Amino acid sequence: MRRRWMVLGVVAVLVVATLAVVGVRWWRDAHRSDLARALDLAAPAERYSFTDWAGVRRALDVPEDSSARALRTLLDDGYDADLTAASALEESAELLRSEYGWSPADLDWELLAQAEDGVLVVAALGEDADVDELADRLAGLGYERPGEEDGVWRGGEELVARISAKTGEPGSPVLQYVALDADAGVVRTSDSAAHLEAVLASDLGAPEEVDDVADAAGDALTAAVYTGRHTCTALAMSQADEIDQASADRLVEEAGGISPVRAFAMAVRPGRDVVVAMSFEDDERARRNADTRAVLAAGPAPGQGGTFAERFDLGEVSADGTVVRLALDPVDGAAVFSDLSTGPVLFATC
Image 1 (cartoon, rainbow, N blue to C red):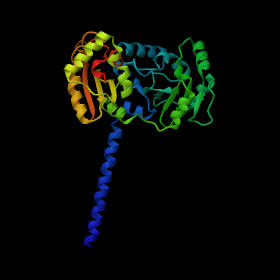
Image 2: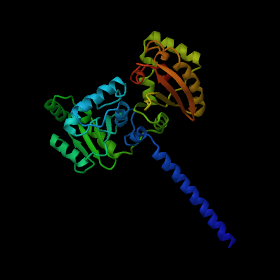
Image 3: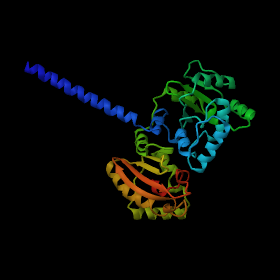
Image 4: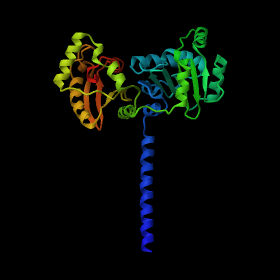
């Protein structure tokens, strides 16, 4: 009898442990940001640009309204607030609204994923979206219906040009090919049929280090997320002139040196503060870079002009595992996100 109770006790402990693990995973999934969920629905890429259109509408107090006037207000106010610079759909917003049946006026969010072999946009449709109706619209516009519901609708450059000419509104190359995903509630578009087909056939999700910096960024109204390779090109001081490069070299040496970045994220949060997250090879490198990059982010901004202090107040800088997180509080009138999500940016250089 005693042996039986011991076995039952072990089983009970295993059940409790299993439920605890499941509970933790459920909690993490339930509390993931829309940025993190968006990355799960895209294929691996070098550069990701995210816009939380539902969050932007709330932040700007613009109602969800499919009228042309409401859309124009959203885009104008979003531009002034530096919340739409990451969008790949802004230029074609009115064309999308009038012809495709969805636009930034009613999307939940949008993610642009730029890879070497093509560009992908993932757009999360609102709760009221009717995917069957969107499919009918594509057919009416002249897209070739796929053999399967989740296949690629083929349009092409000439079709998008005809739709644009008919309406007088610009059409983006990423609208050439479209795939509807009713289960995930998203529409995917691309400038390449082959790239979109490859995305649909592949395992979705971003590289682990990209997920790490996106998680550190948290909830975002808009964000730029880069792999290390793209960071070390797009934000590098090599883009600056020789005088600024020499100044940067001196400042980096005085700060204590830096390590290569494995992934980078810059995000504007709902409170309009900005978060920068950078991933490094190991915990020790992250701790060292938290110190040196804090010094760099509080000093001169060669290649950008002036100082970083003229653009933002530097808040807490921390290292958590391999990820360094910098909190930036933009000064009034400073477009920190659109200015510093492209290089050269000294505190993000490799």
